[in-house]
View 1 (cartoon, rainbow, N blue to C red):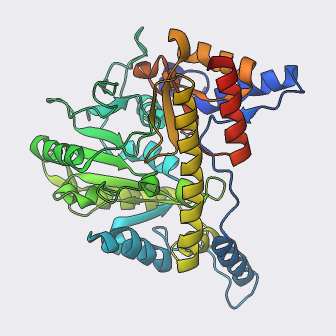
View 2 (tube, protein in one colour):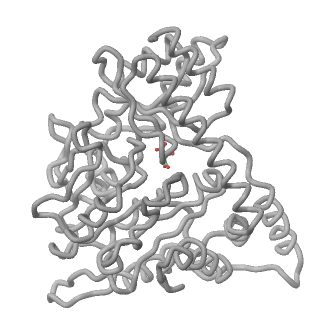
Length: 410
Ligand code: MLT
């Protein structure tokens, strides 16, 4: 008899986005004539940039010839991609990251779910609330929590509430936390941490010997040069922070899959005997044991995102999505909604209409406007009464969605 991991039973039956998908499919089946506009899951809609497509075609051709065929690649990523990351994402911004501190993977969702494995089950974990659900669910699966409470929180996790008063950027906790997940630009609220806020986090982590897991999957949506794109732009972060980066939203790779995790050799945790242990060594052990490297073709595509043409083309795509975000932000404000985010992130976070719960508003929006969004409560109890719309869609669909929402709610 195979006993299951009973911690899974503490989770809701389905993950947030499949649940939304299930409800939308049921609605569409019952209303086949409805033209549903999906602004729920943040999934890119523009085709891959031509420079990326060309690089992937060329890589496929290499794989089809005996002389240039490749089998398993280096687990941490091919040198050509690691060097491009080092130069473009870090050295160009005055940050020194070594090649063996970068771990190329098949996605930040996996990295952010897996990273908790290298910490003790006794490690005290903090998340912001609202939060990207993977951080919470992966810690529940690992057994760091009790069953969810009536307040929607898992005892064992520390929740740092983001609200309108703090601009959805909670301050560091006074004490009692070993590891904190931060996401900036933030999913779901679309808000962004300032340099001063990140400085406070790094100072806090150093003072409390804590680790920051910094999810920067949306950094390319930052347009203000004064805002840090990497936690390593903050002095001292190399001693206390790991950084997650993704090609999903920056180069349209949600269906291609490529990301990387930066683990500086200077970040350490503590072993049972009190000795300091390099997190880089632990993650390298984990990565090389459980992962055989992202595909060669995909890594060639990712590297092409840093070429002159690739950069120009992907920058234009990001500008396109950010114009969508601007239209949504302004259109919804004009309809009377209180909106946040959408300036340095592709997400708009809004207060629901008339005090509706997040799921009530989801149902109203779907049935009365055929627009799909994401209920804020799906991101944690502090998201109740809020709703997320994504700027990832065609211009025509964004404009149509705004018109429909204004007609019903404006
Ligand atoms: C989202 O909609 O929050 C994201 O697309 C989910 C993800 O990146 O996994």
